[in-house]
Image 1: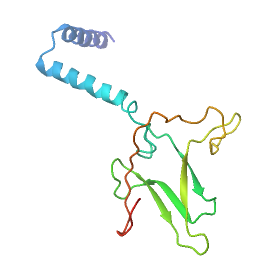
Image 2 (image 1 turned 135 degrees about the horizontal axis):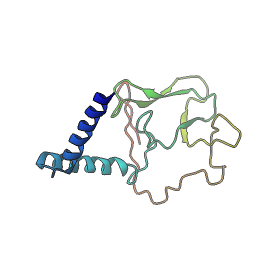
Image 3 (image 1 turned 90 degrees about the vertical axis):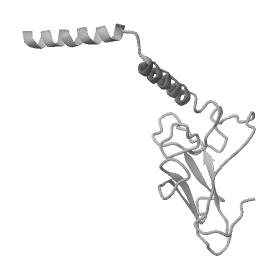
Image 4 (image 1 turned 180 degrees about the vertical axis):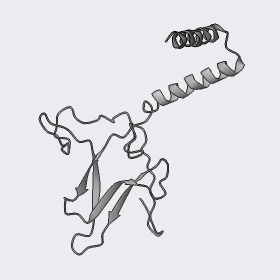
Length: 155
């Protein structure tokens, strides 16, 4: 037991003596790079408002999808698509099935709400007070899209 305490004391003494030494150029550069990285990560969502970046990104704002025109629309969505995303590990894949009748469909990207006592989020179509996001100061909207096969245009 005494040997362990003595060894621990020597390690603590060695650590405290190196902490008091003036940092060399490598240490100072490393510390500056660390502070710059933390500043960028800390502020990465203060200059933009991502709808979806990656399946588990903390910057995602709209996690709930609702089908257009209704739940029977001929569309499917996969929010964790891993086949060749634009960036990150995943992308959102929306798939349209050509059917008879009303041959269109799409998705609303919504922020879900969790009412008191509920365990599953509900869709919010703007009817829940103070649950929306005010984007009135936004100056641009940007998204990446591609198709499995060429030939379509986004207007």
